[in-house]
Amino acid sequence: MRIASLLPSTTELACALGLESQLVGVSHECDYPGSVQTLPHLTSSIIPHGLSQREIDDFVREAVSQGRSLYNVDIELLLSLKPDIILTQGLCDVCAVTPDTIETSLRGVQCTLPASCTIVTTTGTNVNGIFDDLRMIAKATNSLETAERLIEESINKLNQLNGMPANTSILGLEWVDPFFSAGHWVPEQIEAIGATSAIGSPTEHSRTLSVEEIMKSDPDVIIVLCCGFGLEENVEFAKKLYSMESIQSLPVIQKNQVWAIDANSFCSRPTIRVVDGSVHMAEGLQSGDVEGVLQRVFNPH
Image (cartoon, rainbow, N blue to C red; front, side, top):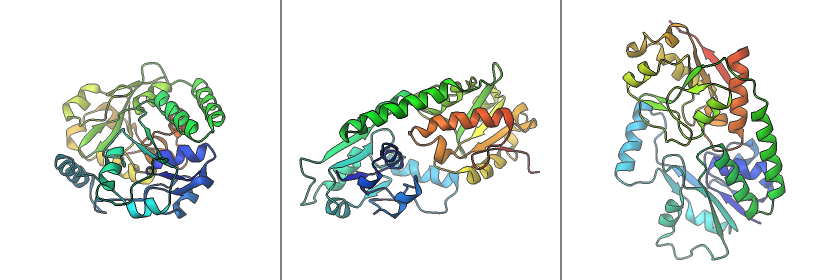
């Protein structure tokens, strides 16, 4: 079986199922496990490198308003690899290649995908949805037994989490310029450790936040988990909060209860590693930094 994966989360789910040897091509963003980076890259982004968060937001908004896809698919390469299965997603036009992008890219191409090629589209917006996506990929690849074992292990991890102190309110920020709430499964990650999500409920989309909303939410903890960024970048984004005059009076800022996490690995992608994200949050917020994953960020001034 030849599998082409067009986004990092489906690549990760396929590898978790033991299917890495069957992957013939991946997206340009696929980086876990690291060995998949040597496979042919089937996608590319139209977003220029080196932009600030504000510039990225402006670029994305303009592209979306014009109906432009943020990602291109190398159709000639995809067809040459002759995949039996293509893995993609229907959740977020901003984050990755969608079925519509594939169909648009195939228009006008003389050689289209054969009828025998199956497109598997993941759509999970919460932890159970991610489990369902894993099962869907597993059914298409005859690996359902492995999927059920992974799901059982993940549920056991969640059930063994040590809870946060009662009524701890955590604000997850998926972007800081402008402010965006944490969406989809991230509020559920927060709730899994016994805390409450200051803004945002499970399955809700991430959205822009006003300063007034943030001030009113008055969280006990802020976790900066900017979408697609690792720990090092999110530490730098977190530091910027301390220089924003508009939120300086927040007790959470005054108390230096701002944290950063490797969101790219443990929050941004709908994979079973979001469960590990909750484990790391619980461990770090109660015991201190988790090396390479979660870090408390103090006022640098």
